Length: 481
Ligand code: F0G
Image (cartoon, rainbow, N blue to C red):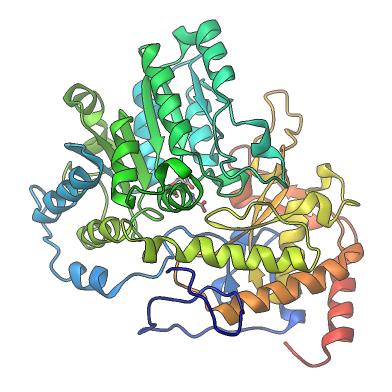
């Protein structure tokens, strides 16, 4: 999808695909939405799909697939060992990344488990630009620590920095000088998820790799959100302007020792794995695959998904394909900015991120503003977002709350799934909610699991604010849904 100019001067992203299969959606009345969020313990993970109109929870495993991907699924070779599908996938990875070896895993976090079990022990430090929830959980489970080295702009909500996911190179060198013996690898997260899908520059990626290699350590890329990052390098970085997406990908891959990914994002399918050039590294991790995932030629994935992934990876080399997400997200972000709604800037990949701290400054961080905003937006519009703030953190070892550095409501825009009118609807309901923000109150835990609490935890509103929100909606919208 390119930015095609409209004669009338209107600036909207134009889809370069047509829709051939559709899925019916329901929009339930606001009263039912208030009931549904209560039943879900105010946790959008626990909502049922039948109650959801726009599912902006995640882009994971829910991107639209292409006709070519679906066609490829029909020729998948279903055999336990030696599947031709696995060879096709490995060949595609070798073609775009230059990696000869591939360890398949059922999804991204399974690849993280393999990495952590191979390299992490008590006291290990894994430096990274920013953590992802499942990554951190695997490292800390084994007694390791995550050290976040993102540049200061990374956690500033509003910024003009084009690469907010960049590493602070000075801090990286200092960490190596002080604690290098405890560091087995550095993890670079492309399209940094938790700070708003923010990219790193090619220059920064190369520098992190050079520094890390100069200390004799490994460089690992979490490439789950690489497709968005590639788009941003291509469009925002002068040095990459004349490189093709394929060339940029190869330049990045050449600097990595291991590239792992969730194929629920990269490759528009479902699955994951770890790709590498070095045989010794491959052999070091290999036995964990049959032990935890499945035999080496499927790793817990369906062969149909692997076939779709190989085609999806090829389609990731096409700017028309990978620009759709970022352009829709930019449209949504720009519209919200125009209406005065606080959002993360610049627009990143993955989704549009509302800044709950400025949206509802009257809700204290201990009462989970991002979680409260997620519940409120579901009531206001049947839109399901994901809390990315303090609820997504883990408590400290002494049980105290670890307040997140940012309180965001992530509204994911799965690739090629929503139409522009649906995005406009979301913008409209967010604006309504913003104008009624004083009605929104906080949340408190009533059931709090000790690990990954954002998945299963249940919360109650601290007052009857949700009822008041329903009343305000009825007053403004009459009988409308
Ligand atoms: N790394 C990153 C950067 C991710 O965004 C994810 C998943 C994973 C690893 C784990 O991969 O889900 O296949 O096990 N992110 C999803 C999300 C869950 O909604 O952002 P997975």
